[in-house]
Length: 328
Image 1 (cartoon, rainbow, N blue to C red):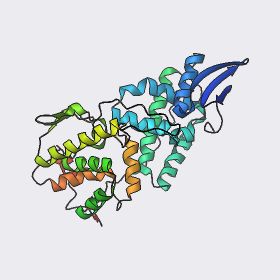
Image 2 (image 1 turned 90 degrees about the vertical axis):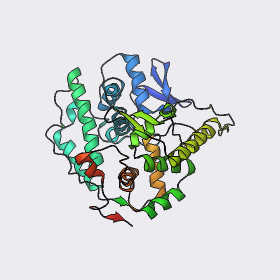
Image 3 (image 1 turned 90 degrees about the horizontal axis):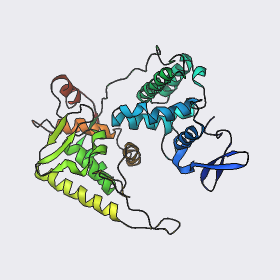
């Protein structure tokens, strides 16, 4: 497996990967940058076409994936490369294989395992990412077929979770300060998770919150209410405090202050990420609902004010008050 065996002629020294050939050590990338950066540097050094699927993941991420929506890029990158300390599911399962070694039966088994472990939907999304990689590899001449074609996806069921107000309030009370502000913003505005992550400070304007929806590519405008205006003021204050807070690391070296334009940050001032939302929700141990369930809750509690901007059939999809079972 790739996660256990480094590429040939690569060695680790003082926290950095090196390529060693004829006793010549060529610095590549830092170990904490992960396998994606290692294989990118190896590709630059060798100039040869990718071999195993992990190398193709890197090439795809550096080229074709850049044409996708930001939310899709982040999701695919998570499947390929994972997060610090956690390996990507596609790398762990297929990264060490050559494209010709992957067959439809392997894809079907991957989907079945995802379903058996409670990740049926996540398995479908990972399969879509892998299929895109194979299509890219076929265009480049690195693969002859796409083994994902013709393999039936896992069955997906619409969510039947509705958040009770008492459960939401209890969760907000237990959430860390910076993340509680994120959840409150999601509830008051009904903004999608990815749009919250990508929202910039420039979205805060005198007449409301203005941004481009990542899904529709259309401009969105949320008018100010007294409650929303006060919340955004707290968010800006928390952001400023987190980004300017000085401390020293374990080596007693002061940290470099983060520089970015994202509105929402973690407690260290770095941009909020999808993984950050997921990990915070896991630690909160909610009553069976996820962060995304806040959006339908915002629609249900919005009354005549359609905070999510949907009409017609899609509006009915997000209206869960009368037809779904509440979580207690």
